[in-house]
Length: 443
Image 1 (spheres, helix red, strand yellow):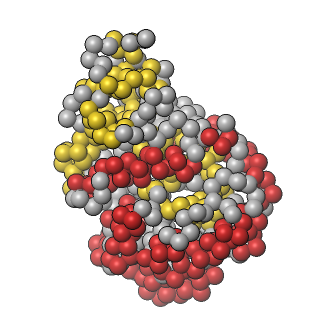
Image 2 (image 1 turned 30 degrees about the horizontal axis):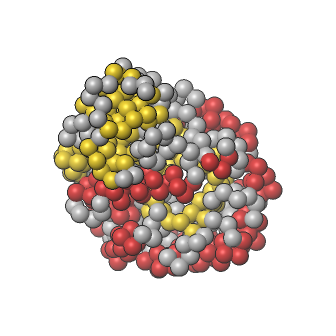
């Protein structure tokens, strides 16, 4: 038996499939090679994780890194830097760039751009549209593609799929799980005058009301059942949607964001102004409580950040000219660890929502758990660390966070990607080594 390792993470509490156990983690060739007592083993490098918890690397399945086309807001280098500083080892990036990711050439361009610049592993969604529906079944099988993304609302041009006929064509074109932004575009158009007349973001959840989300999700469920296509409903925000989705778990999985779990209207709009503006909107306490209940009930499968940065100058425009979206990949895990410290969810549930759940739903190969043979993607956290989230520590090119000034308990101390330390004590280590993620359905 080979008792020599490239890296040993020693003395921590490891979150294994069997539970939280005191165990050293031995890494060889980028993969987990041993779990247990390894104090006498030879290792090229050791990390003392005494008093810390060793979690599976966090997977953020919903980010917008703005490259190509809007690199002044973010790019693949700065976005993934924020990811690993926040304990994230793999990201899925959305297709609404300029140009949008609608073709094989656009996908390959993003993969090429990420080479040597991405700090974490990555995959890219291909957007669905009327123009590429006949090629989606082939596109979703390309290396580096995490699947197909549908915008039923809140998008423009070729990425908008607002009618049921096109939506059904997309759902029958392929077999991998489809990620969906479910807001009803006709209703949004009908109600936009609410926002234009109000000229304040407090009107955002009135314009993009709960009914807009529910109508779209009802339409989606009917077509998913008809076509028997698996769908993943992103950033769900309403009590009514959660009740509906709980009845359709055979075809639908569910994602929520830390923003919708943490912020609450109308207070956040008065306090943060347009920095609280995102789609779907931050809603009131009734809906936030329903999201937490859905987590408790097991309806929610994934928590993703929906990282969508804009510059402060862009956000300073008068509502509703101000763009929707906020940064979040770097604060995803700290916010969830703080909720864990407050007793709103267990550490095991955090792991399921940010590692095991994403890997299970999207069929990610070799990621999502601390087990022999899996990629040595590890997020080492101090559950007792008290920190303050600040704008100054934000790696995103936008330079701000809606959670600035918030004190949290629980913090990522090191990020390990395939056995390589890429972040330690809030500092990036060495050079970017991110690679395309692999998927079971395309191997």
